Image (cartoon, rainbow, N blue to C red; front, side, top):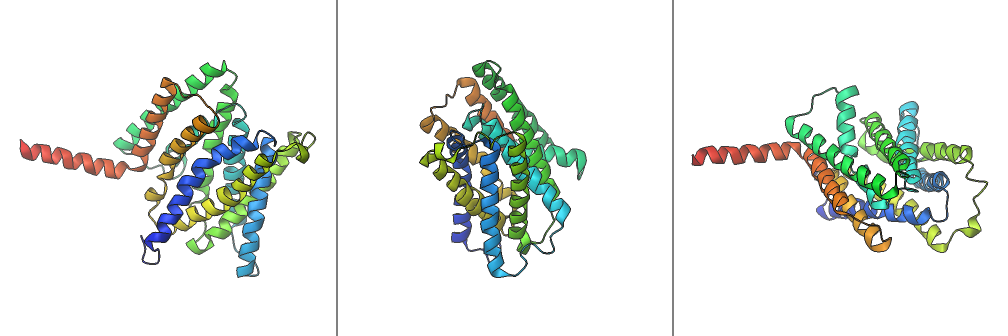
Length: 313
């Protein structure tokens, strides 16, 4: 933690990304009861991006000037339109807790893509073990989802898997694009470019023809507002602020905690069933993600234990 990051502000930012992003899956499920998937996601990011642009405009005349346009737009389309938009679309046939759990594998997917196409740095043994455990957990969760849906949910699960891949790819594309003081501008440009892509997707999917604002309940509009203000502005801003001040491996702990929150809320509020197989799959996924995220700490702990054991002998 840097000197200019007071502990209270760091704790508040962590609370935002842990609690808010853990509840966004519930909000999306509520939104989908009255709004089309791509259209609702487009509204979310266009509104959030516009509000963030207005805030940045108050601080300077050209908020997005100097950003590398092509990689910024590409990362925004991959993350907001691909990662979020496909997740929203997939949640039409997948429970919110399951969607959160599948998205928890993003650190695993980032590691695989980084190894195969970017740094090409071979993962260490504990990371490989985490990948194997996480993939086994995903297989259990997917198998149980398909079993409960009679096979109808397989296509939606595949879309969320594609969402995980596009978000992970966008994460690697955006890495090191801008200095820490331009992260808010980067987030704004990504939201706007992703929102435009989602707007096009909603049009091509024919969603506007069947979209009637008067049929959307007050709860649906409130849930969309929650996603705009808290999911995209508060939590995203907190995430970017933390990345500039706290080691990335600490920030990414949200990938372990958020799915647990989403699973609980899905069961309590939406009545989503949690079977023994899906619970075991969830534990394996979270354990695998934890090994990938904290490989160094796990390796150091095991080395200390083994060293202590040899000392006793």
